[in-house]
Length: 426
View 1 (cartoon, rainbow, N blue to C red):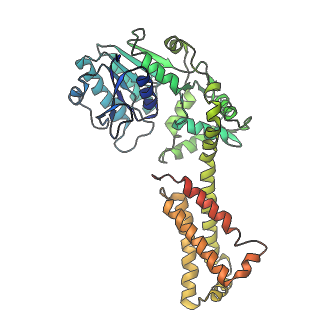
View 2: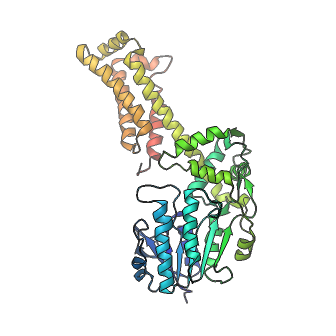
């Protein structure tokens, strides 16, 4: 017999996906509140936290719902997805409707740090929703996770990437305090509070067994990935703050002023409550990465910085080639080469300067374009075309001691690698 039906908000997110699996494992029926398609294993309910800010919208949706879990959250505002809408307005309407509908319990996935000392918009808005829930005459639990580890998590990808670098940069001395918790422990905690009244109307910190410095955590991740001992480089905090200011203007960046401020504040709490809830100590960071997953995580982490580095190198080749062709290399010698290909007069000028501008465009596009699959194909086609023409008209360049043509092969392979790893969504 099913222990009840759960409305899970944020089911397609990192935490929500793991909570869904844990709920299914315990036999709960799950309704997933989603904007798009629901994950496998649950029934879809169309919701939009950016717009659904009236409890009257939520009341009919809660018919037949025993429990509500709100795992919706965002680290950066984009368009209509604002902290005010997703962290405050929609949850407050949902919570009020849940109380009116007689829902047995609401579990709010908040964040460690959403307290009286909160200063970031993320923490402040999470706290406002928490406080609203705490005033309602119904059973509720506010789950406050620390930094969450999971192999598909965005923050995990960032920290693993940093840990995989030959020289591992840390802000200041890397003494910032964190207490990472494995996402499976968090998902288990979320499900367990549904079946017990021990933690009703309380906030529970879901953290790892002990606090770590950022430096310690990165060292643990690096060793877990089989990459050996790290070589740390302390980055002066003024430079880190400038980088955070720049990161705040870049789409998708996890580093901005607020995330840096949250890191500097520290993120730790006693593990007593989560240990009692789970009936065991939470997983230690040393056991986050299984032997089976270590190699894949290490490869993913290294690709996270190697692919951008390769892209910048390819862009540099095109940009330098374009600048050199515009006049740094003697123009008369360029015309002489074009003449051997059969181009003279205006046609030669068009070919010379047009090719130079195209090279510059390829280089700049490699840096700024978000969807680059077509660009990589065009670059490969141009290099192959150049190689065929030079082979026909200037075959002696194959025997040049500097290898101007043989170097086209690794260039094409580098671009082909970028093409293969290009995400379909840019």
